[in-house]
Image (cartoon, rainbow, N blue to C red; front, side):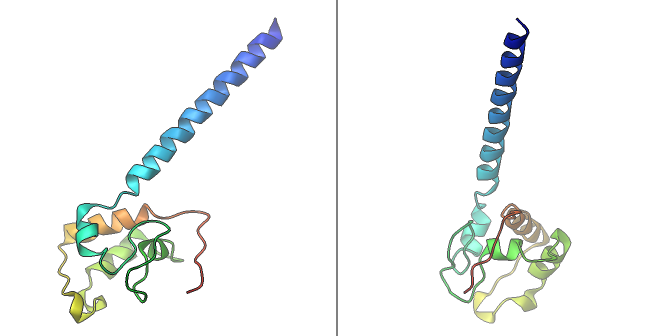
Length: 119
């Protein structure tokens, strides 16, 4: 009789673990969907989704930027907010709110197992 409780508890734990994994996967997929602002402003030059290649070779992908060693939300916001970082041809003018939205999206692309491929 005791073994039935053990089997039932094990099955319940396995199902609960699957639900948590599924929820985590759904949350990650949802978080990784680029906002319209990112698509409209950035995707012409940068890869804005995980595993994508930038349309313009010298433009780093958002996944590479997000996984840069030592990068923090604060340092990313400062970088994105500094108009001197953009080539003149881009003519990018971002509001502080836009900068935060882009930075927060980029940080959803962080992965513990990320490895940058040589260019």
